[in-house]
Length: 299
Image (cartoon, rainbow, N blue to C red):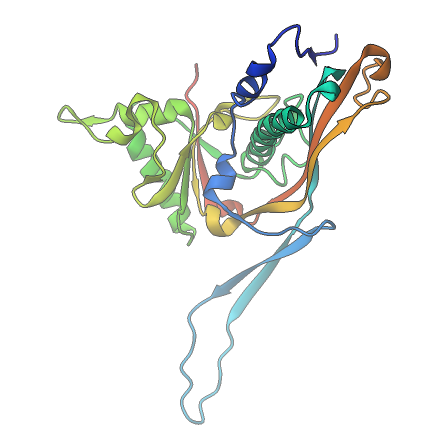
């Protein structure tokens, strides 16, 4: 059965904008990492590893060689699409009401695409079906970074410190910390001598930083599908070892004819229009050693 939003018969016109603005979702990766422009045909990121220190050369002294290794990562944009049918009553609204309607849908669609980006880049999932994507093993944090099991005998802050030290030992800084909602609440329960250690996480709050690291609590970490894992915490150098960006952002499109979502249901014949939003987003995990994960405890 085709899901169609029916204006007028289901929702009063005054409620449409309010309803659509309640769509929730944003990208934790976008918050923790730096965005860089991605050309439509992709970009190549180079990762240099220079061993040893620089040399001070005295008069007549030979310049000694250093050792360098070079790896490259090609980032190619993928098309993300979200679309929905509504009744064609939309076409007969006033222009001002149409603009408000489309703005509300655009805001909601942007949030859906942001969540889809996390599901793809963190878990290696095709967001719509929650099945493994072709890039899971090569360009997702779940696919590239081996997670450690949660230890119920240890407090979560000690386990976070352990994975942070793993990243630091690989000569990377930890610039960001991503947590599932359950992990955020687990931090809120950590006490020493009866004193809550991280009150900023209490009552479901989402602080912007944790011990100098940019932090974010997001339910996208806990989304599980196919062979992906339910992540509890991800720590790493998000600023330097994870790159992402838009190559093109397409505004909301109103389609009035045909069967664009391949449902076997003609738009015109059924008095419907289809709203479609598309974005081309590319990302790359430049070095898996720059990240560490804690897998969620078993239910």
